[in-house]
Image 1 (tube, rainbow over the protein chains, first blue to last red):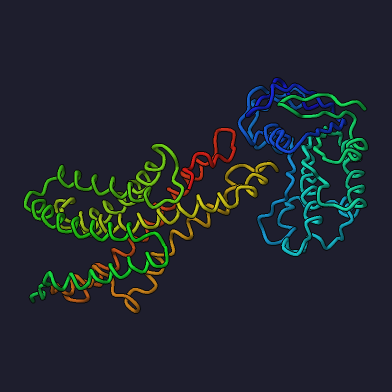
Image 2 (tube, chains in turn red, green):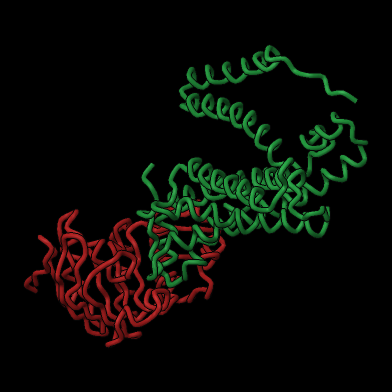
Length: 198
Length: 265
C-alpha cells in the first residue's frame, strides 16, 4: 500500500492519496500540471513536504536508497550509463518477461546505441521490474510504443501488479489506455487531484 | 658561474607573445583575453614582490613567518581553484573544498619531504620549504581545478542518468561513481604527462634553474625526481579528496542530486 499524506512540492498539494497493493491508479493532466514532479517527489528525488508511506513505513524512516529500491520511478525518457544493455541488469533478466515485452534473448548483448527509442523504453521498464519493487511510478511508460507493443506492456504490468502484488501509479496522456489499465483515475490540475468518473 | 642577466627589453619582447595571444583570443571570441592579460600582469607583479619577500624571509628564518607565507599561498591557491570553475559550489563550499584538500595533501607532502627526505635544519628552513611548497601547491591547484570542473560539468550533463540510477535504488556513491572516477583521472593527466615526458620532451623548470645557477646536473636531477614524486603525490591525493568532497556535497541528506548547489553558468 502506497499512501501520500499531505504531500506538497512547488505549487502542488497538499495531496492525500492511498493506492492499495495490487491497485493501479492513473493520473492525467495537462503538460506542466506537475505530474512528473509528483512522481519525482514520491520517489524522494525532489524535496517535498508531508510524508509518504509504503505499507505504513514512512519514507523518512528509512534510507533514501532503500526507499527508492522499493518505490521505483521509471522516467519518461530512459537513461543509460554503460555501453551494453546487459550492464544495466545487475540481477540478470527474466527470459519470460523479455519475451513478453517482444524482445529477443540477445537483447542484453546489444549496445544501447543501436536500440530504438521503443526498445529502450521497454528495456528500462524491465530493468525496473527486475528490482521487484513494491510500488511502481510510471511516467508515460508506453509513450514511444506502437499500439501492439503498448498492449503487451500493459498486460505484463497488469500481471506484475497482481502477482507481486504491487501498487502502480501510472501517468498517461492516452484516455483509452487509462480507462483500460486503471482501477481509479485522477486529474491533476491547479495543484489538486480530482477523482475522474469511471 | 654567473647567470646572464636579462634586460627589461628581453622581458618586453617575451610579453609580446602574450599580447599576440590575447589578440587571437579576441579574434576567435574565446573570451579569455581579459583573464589572460590579467594573469600575465599578476604574475609579473607577484613574482617581483615575492623576490623581495623571500629576501626578507631568508634573513629572518622563523616558523611564524614561514607559516604565515605558507598560509597566504594556500588561501590564494584556494581562491584560484574556485575562480577557474565554470559552475563552482555555492557558498563557502566552493572555496573550502579546494582549500581543504590542498591543505591536506600539499602540506602533508611538503612537511614529509622536509623532515624525512631533505632533512633540513631547522625543518622549516625557508630556502627549501617555500619553493618546495610552491611547486607542490601550484601543481595540486591545477589538478584540483581540472578535476572539480570536470566533475561539475559531467554531473550537469549526466544529471538524468544519475537520477535514474538513484531511482533504481543505487546509493549516491554508485550513481555518481563514473563521473567521480573520470574527474580524478582527468585531474591526474597533467602530472602523468609531466613525469612521462620529463628529460626527453621537457627539462623541468626547477632542474633547469639549478643547472643555470651552477649546480652539477646529477644533483639537480635528483632534486627534480624528488619534486616530481612529491607533486604526483600532492596532486593525486589532493584531487581525489577534492573531487570526493565535492561529489558528496552534490547530494543532500536524502541522497538527492542537488545541482542547485552549483552556481548557474
